[in-house]
Image (cartoon, rainbow, N blue to C red):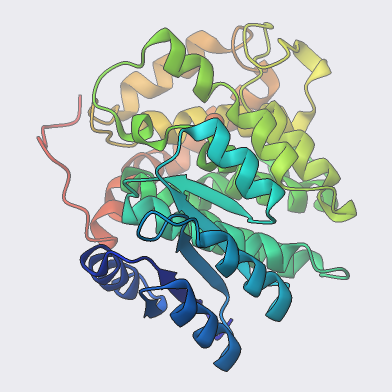
Length: 347
Ligand SMILES: [Fe+2]
């Protein structure tokens, strides 16, 4: 990968489709080459190298996508391959994985989801390298979150970085050691990472409440995120904190209904901060909460949803930083050039 500009080979016999997709990917920082047939794709693969190949499975009624995949495995074994298929989901997933593809997307493919999928696959490949220093993992993961979750759901712009900042301050005031704090900071950046693996990304930006089935699906994200972060020795505690971020002090959280000190101290800090930053962020279905309402909420939830020791430190910090922290999401949205719909006054 050249800097942060992955090289992508886009293969499909529908020229209009790949031209449009290529233009969108180009605007998102990819260097795109187009190929209209498997033969043309194989010529490109023989002549150059790519970070990712995105290919249709069926060309003019013939399943030539497999040839592109095989050529890629042969010529460039580390290149990420993503299949686009019109086949039903389960059948497509099984055959893609058996054929060695990293991922598959069902047609019609949303270019934003495609961009997130490529970023994810290319960076996960980078993360799998042996011997990465902890700081290198932080850099890769920060970039990964910014390019995936925060692109699919632009309202979350800056959420990971803010969560990291507040977690660090609370951890310091609680006297949590520096090594654990460092790992908490990475968990703060990556806590919602599992959302990018959910079956349907569209309800992440849905206006209005989720259906029970959608809510159940979203609840998978802490465990999925922890699992997908991998078995890197340096990430063991990071995975634990990510898995715990929706557990609650009184045992009403998920996925394991852990209670009190069954949840790590870092996991308890992350739980508070993540809720705080979500409440203060404007979403398609809600206005951001104001300072007073937020403070009352956390006071009321001390010893219920949240660890009273963490809440004491958090509320003390809010006395000094409350106004700045509560308005930070709006500043980050504006900095990212996102103009929210239906703006109204803070309540
Ligand atoms: Fe979450």
